[in-house]
Image 1: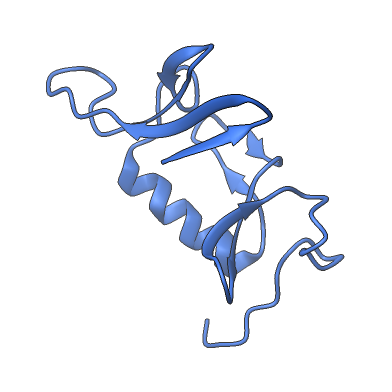
Image 2 (image 1 turned 30 degrees about the vertical axis):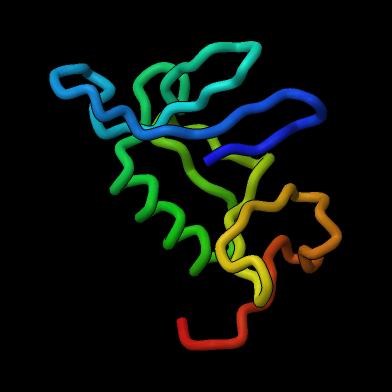
Length: 106
């Protein structure tokens, strides 16, 4: 997954190097900054990250990272056009309660 922030290319990856402590965990990379596990110290197993996204969507909140910190800069949301995406807490697409209204079963 890739994206740009300003003029900097960055993205996410899943470490597939068997035998490494970060095997199966998320990582972040950027052209200027190299790559590192996400969160920076231990990484986040992909299955656990997906489970946390599902919980955050149901509860209308930001992600709770495995290191105990809240990822308040990016909230997972579902939209009619983009599907699963992330928005910042000040994004105009958010309702004042901090979530996008989902019209469907929970």
